Image (tube, rainbow, N blue to C red; front, side):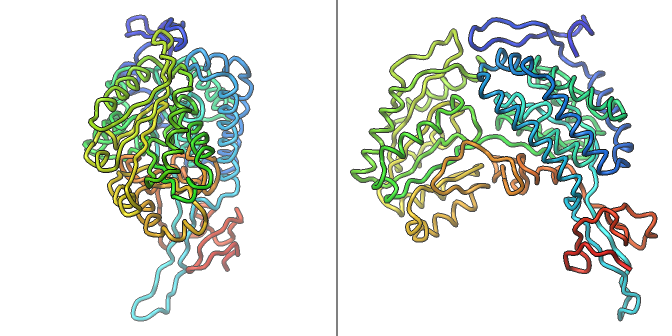
Length: 521
């Protein structure tokens, strides 16, 4: 809602990160009454959405995709003004956004995601008969989604959280990120048009603006809200999680909060291509000015002459790197403060781009820190995420010391190993440790770049996320916003289509313990 719709509300504007200048129009901080109305409307819409057929849900998702695509360059130009991410990057992000919406539409159309399970009755079983029991996933109800600063399209108003919540049959209330409110308004309007075109209740989708924690907490504390999707900082994610847990009726907050994404360079990878490894690592760290939740923030290696070559090349890359505009002034300031904090840690050597960052243009300069494992293990600051274009190289005296370092890591979204296939087999213990520390293990690759597909898992143990069992990227994201419902001894005609004997949707079901598409007699 724009400020002009409520002149008494507190107002704010977006800012161009490149210039620091305000961008019109003004937006207003949502009031408690507005938030209440939005969630109340979503609760009213929830019952109607539960009754929608799968093809109606899929068509709604296709309509959202079409409406966003129809925004054309207006959307890209607005997002670029508000984020400085560049039009090429934003066009790619728009493609990712509409493609993941299409993926969820196809998932819903196919239908097997509901995980239908049927145990047919055994009336003659001794000592007691078995009743007919049928189970499937159904919508949870109104979902709150919080837009992320670093992905104004793919993790925002119509991003993966919203698309997966809609796909599961839920209404959504979005809290727009205040750094790109204009972009959010354009996408919200596209969703509203899709809601209207498909004849859905108005409460199917709502969006509120706000800069203060009060708006976020008011949304999370509404008694009709059933779940939350969030991507952002540990501080904000944990605040929402704690608030949701303290409600009279606690609800899940699926918060993805970033991580250090450790990289382990085994000796053979360093011996065979130290310079090439350093160059590619530098590109991964500085991609998007380091503002990805999968930015590799820690690099571990065993001391050797070739590790020295790798380290020297990496330092050279960072010193020759160029500062670039970050998403907003707060992020740039936070990055600079974090860099200075690590620079002061004893026994750490810091190397930064020779060209200084221009604070007037919200820039962040690339940098790398080098430290021995013994010092790293004693410093909590060195083990925490740096949100920006920087990484920490940790030099280990031996393979055993590197393994010990891995055990000290907290939960992470990813963990990467570089080495030969034979070397990987010899480091099974390291793989076992990292499997407990991360949600995605990468071999001879880089964590930046998260494929949107059916097998992707973008999650990990705390503090990377609040629930490591779920992903915020890929088809499996839908399972966050569905709950199982079991029907016992129901007449066939009263069951959902997915559980009826005839299997009219022709989906895969688990019938008496075996996967089947067959109809039941």
